Image 1 (cartoon, rainbow, N blue to C red):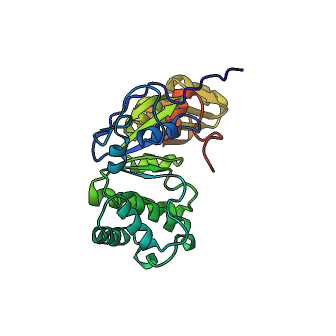
Image 2: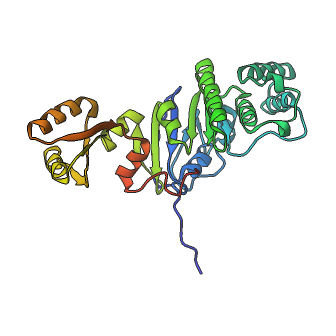
Image 3: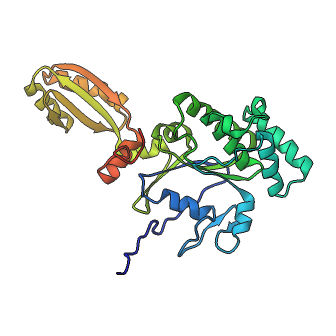
Amino acid sequence: MKKARVEAVRGIDLDVEAGQLVAFLGPNGAGKSTTLRMLTTLLPPTSGTATVAGRDVARDPAGVRARIGYVGQKNSAGENHRVRDELVTQGRCYGLSASEARDRAAELLALLDLEPLADRKPGTLSGGQRRRLDIALGLIHRPALLFLDEPSTGLDPRSRADIWAHILRLRETYGTTLFLTTHYLEEADSMAERVIIIDNGTIIADGTAGQLKNDLAGDHITITTHTERDAAEAARIAGATADGLTVTSRVAGAASALPELLRTLEAAGVKVATAETTRPTLDDVFLALTGRSLSDDDLPA
């Protein structure tokens, strides 16, 4: 029986500028990992072209690998050598001289707060410490572009914040272009300059987090009333629908629109019990685009 053809990625078009911090989001099975594996030469594309760090991924994969860093979801370091030795060995594999590898290892140990751990074996480190070591291994050859595949997944909130502090410090220090996937939407929202959302193998949104939220989700005003009659009248005035005593409307610039709405409702004799504004999330953007949530079943708790 002939197997059905599966198109994990279909005709995506990306252009990332040097120095950008780009978050690549989507539910499981959307094509994130396949795209990342193609861009890092781990998976040959079946059609199309891609130029990464000035090199063609199909015709010059070795040239791409020499110019990028890649931090996968699993730990990169071995278990039987000291942290410092792992970094030096990685540097030697990239063609650094012995002294260059030692100097670069010392630089990254200091930058990533790994100096106190330099003589320990990776297997004795905590999850957050190991992720910092993974990042150091990906940077040992001074790549202009670093791919990070879910760098903070599985870490506790404090370790996640620590990892992000180091990632941002690296970008500030070296000007490295960062292309990352993450399951934590609040990370992409607060840290990334650009957010790209992929679903069913195609890109469905691309822009800053603020642009996507304003254009595709919009702010919300939620008011409650004392009676369903007032709620119905408030819904009519706001162009929204009422759910019991609650009325929620989508508006542009909710913070500035709320005072005018309250004045209008008061003039119409509607008594408002509570009123609040909320900014949308990236999950709201995905919901507006697809009718489902990025958080439904696809992302870890």
